[in-house]
Length: 252
Image (cartoon, rainbow, N blue to C red):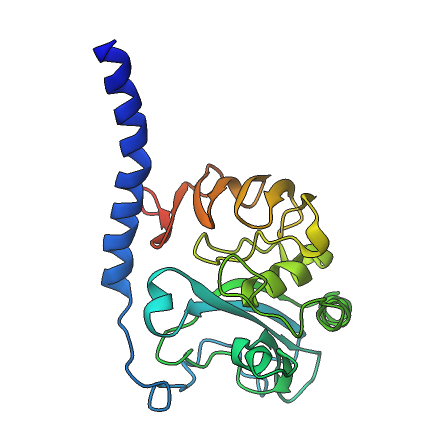
């Protein structure tokens, strides 16, 4: 009896330990900015320069969310540049616009690699060259068909990551593997319980973004519990932890 009780306690302790490890790593990677008005929005120069890059480019970026939310998750957006274009077009969902009764979908010309109110962006998908102009057209069509342009919920969605995942599912050429910190990516529109993964290389089951399982070639195996993602990516030798994000193993 005691042995059985001890086993249960161990199994209950494992996820708590994992979350604690993730929290420690997250707190080391993110700092809270006191005022969004003074937080940096400077570009970092990681996007290709349209002046020297004539080929078509489609990218997806993530950056830690502003303020305390950044300890838990990231904000994501999409950037595209058609062949020969002089600049990028960005697509993203901005929550405060929905809170004020407006359209949360923002499509605009601009620099794609700006800091997100102090947080450094990371490129999580990058496709270029032949055929990407068609990809860009389908990104635009998918973005404009997003069903929650007037609704935004930080947790469990729909939010900016719900939007990015929604577009990616319709454009599998992106092969997008959103990080486990992209809370809202598993919120499936229209109450669906089953869908392809954002990368288009597998399938997932999700209950309103609160509970689910995902299996994909790009993503690996993920379990979502109350919006917190735990996972393993065997192909890229990485583990996925809540708050901490994706952690590569043995230098991968």
